[in-house]
Image 1 (cartoon, one colour):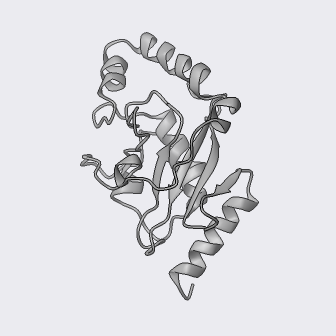
Image 2 (tube, rainbow, N blue to C red):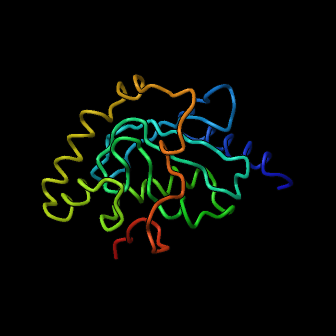
Image 3 (cartoon, rainbow, N blue to C red):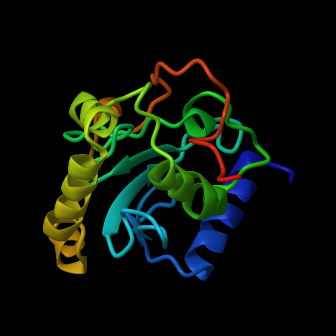
Length: 184
């Protein structure tokens, strides 16, 4: 690839040509929302979220900022801002990754394998550790209340956002693993 802007254009185009609904913000390709469906065979299956993506000028050498716009109950997603705590996006990003990796691998793994030892949502992490059944009930309740198609059409799209609204590399994790562990 000869320049980051060509790579950015290609990655956004690949995402648009995939099964994801992509809504550009301000007629550019540096900021957009993506319709994201909860992964099959997870607590989040059936849920639909609008995820905001901001691509820095240095993309793909610098990671995209990712944030859920409608509410989700998860230990590694800030309930108020939607900010995502995921090592592979925040600390160990590589130009080998692209936007399809984010939506087809990284976010589904995050939802399947939450990490309560590195929370952005302390209530979700605590509940997950203390009462798994109640945690699962609350996740499903949030999916029913906030993660339906009608919810994402009513989510306000901010014209300008603060860096605190989405992932920004300030996650406190010390391990270099992708969210969770694969089942043996």
